[in-house]
Figure 1 (cartoon, rainbow, N blue to C red):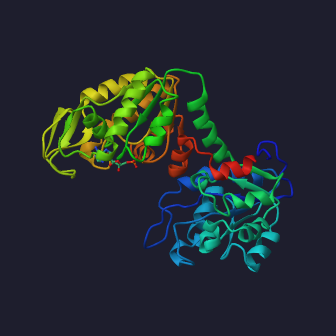
Figure 2 (cartoon, rainbow, N blue to C red):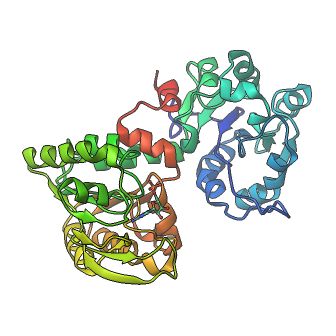
Figure 3 (cartoon, rainbow, N blue to C red):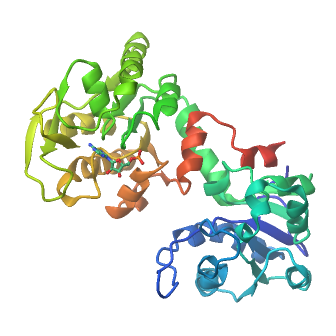
Length: 396
Ligand code: AMP
């Protein structure tokens, strides 16, 4: 494995796997959010500025064969704008034209290949396809954290054709460093805030966090399964009855490990799953039938805030309520504000793995926390302790 900080790119073609899976306007095909393009820019610019040329490969959407609407040609002008250099494009990723285009690339030039998922061999991880991709570069850089949990040709298999010339880009390196800092440094207290819809999708993470954290705040839809497991009455709130025993087990484990597992004490309930539903504030253990909890209440927010602002390391995964609805976003906003405040006071805060990223962006606070992850599913798996194939392929 090589290191992007010290590698000599002079005269080399760098084949970079980026995650340019960006949202497009359905009619005009314009890029509606270029966060992912901007996130990869430091790696690309570094290589261009140190004498290399760049071949970019990415997927876009989940095409079934070649589908015009998923063509990366739609994003060429936005990539050029972000990088402030012209960007060449070729309408295939492995054919003769593509190979000729990358071969003729001069120092400082950038070529974007067509969507790698136009070939089913990409997701199948076919070796011959990966080898054809590898011909585009003298060196392979993986900067696509969002797909690092997939053992695809361009994210994983291709690395084997660069035994000594493979490395992480700055973005991927930053993601790994941020999680390691939160989970493996000695500073205390470490607080994890886990929310979102279901216990089932977060169970492995919660279990692993029990070996790491001092405080575990559980909010969002999954809190009601815990409340029911403790004997509370949760009305029509989201509950996974299959997970009651598991929830009980987690509560016992936390107690045995002397971890402060915080559950909300009050909740805003609604008579239907609708922003304009009737709502009232109740004790979370006494939710009337016909009503469902859609946000945490003010007393809970106050207590949660108190835990967060006294933390040195913070991991936030998942909203406290249905934050997409204006009337049920308050608990999530208050968590975001508390994380910002803790960060101002010197804590390291990582927002990652799903909708808390959408929330912090929605509230315009992303630049006031320490790190916002770009990889949803990849971050979840990384937090679960899984060795991501894209990372393993570079390390081994
Ligand atoms: P996740 O992707 O697991 O992080 O779940 C995020 C989703 O959970 C968001 O779309 C929220 O609207 C939803 N959510 C949060 N709190 C609740 C709740 N109390 N009831 C139902 N859904 C919720």
